[in-house]
Length: 116
Image (cartoon, rainbow, N blue to C red; front, side, top):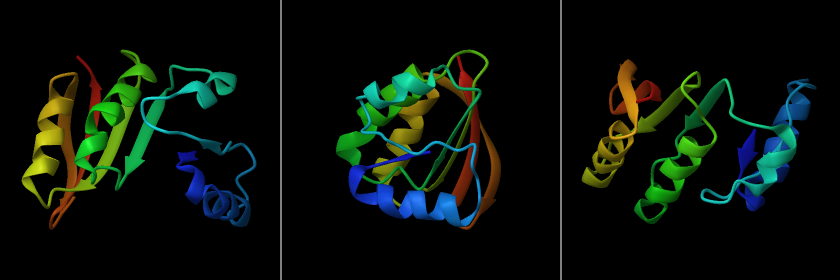
């Protein structure tokens, strides 16, 4: 599991509380996957929840998802499509991945994707 440096203590605490010993917690800044090298890639599955919210990070986010996945990777992305910028990210995502809607509840959408 990954997150920004400021959120890592809480993420580690949640992993520990839920007794998930096989999960590794590492820092990840989109666009810089250096911390992921020791655990290898591509990944079988990439899950992102509520990570589409800062427009300035969209290109780095998409680049990171692209670099850590291959043709066999399943990407699951849950997000709120509240603003036009959120829909713009989805369009960027669709240029690199086959995207399908898996579930929706109000403005929360869950998408499944694979590389084109």
